[in-house]
Length: 193
Image 1 (cartoon, one colour):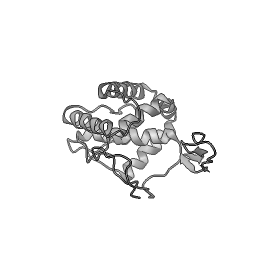
Image 2 (image 1 turned 180 degrees about the horizontal axis):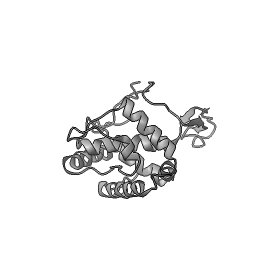
Image 3 (image 1 turned 30 degrees about the vertical axis):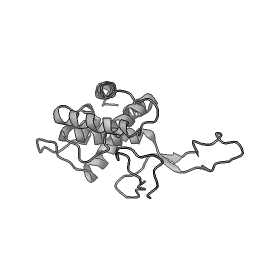
Image 4 (image 1 turned 135 degrees about the vertical axis):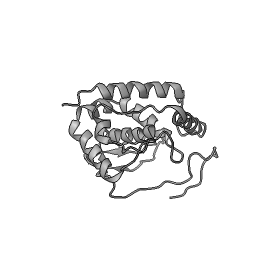
């Protein structure tokens, strides 16, 4: 769906919204959640609609994003633009307590790894197959290095410059440090649970 932008930026944020409906993700676990409009209560005399969609749980979203980041880190390159948002999202999911819940749910972690292995088989920069099971069981990589780190930093700067993050955004170095901490926490979590 295309829309007219209220302001023009660098072009990092596209003037369209893509709704994806596909069978490459199970979407489970999920449950019905109440969703209110952000503007609700902000305009006197206007009642905004509410929705109750079936929504994939944030713990699954955490593992989906973390394993996508893992692939990028092992491939040492970005395939296109707008990838820095995944690192930002992983940090926000961690701040909300969902990373710890994801680490504790070994069945979910391994289900994501199995699904990714079937539908998103990838190779690392050295051409070795990426092992998603190893990633969710003590070998997760959330921090790129070298050219990958430079590309991610540039992508993050473009995202911030275009106003994708409303309000104050954290410096890239801080975001990267937070991902380093999340990576260490994930990898020290007891994989035998």
